[in-house]
Length: 151
Image (tube, rainbow, N blue to C red; front, side):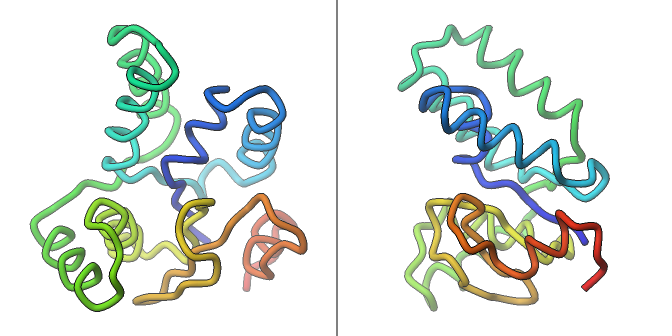
């Protein structure tokens, strides 16, 4: 099962919201099969912005972090098709356009899950389900991924 990570999961993993959330995010990522994780390019752009503007990292440091994530996991490009799907998703479901880009990119890459604390937990669209990985009980699809089951 393929799973995409939203910006907030990456931000937490980078420690920008404190050690407890960093430990949760890193622990979650380490539990998932590495070959199941993909990253929307949009999420990396947003990560860069958060690291520079809110976390106070230098631009070079933020770039190095983004490159590290790029090296760790495959990327999902924001194509013209993704952007067009995102505009429909935004219009139909009232999502902010950049959130819609992440959802559309993940769905277009055949992800089953998008892990996000910011988007509506349980929202489903075009085969993808948004799951907040930091709440209990965990969503059954996330449990299946973490247990190695093939739902």
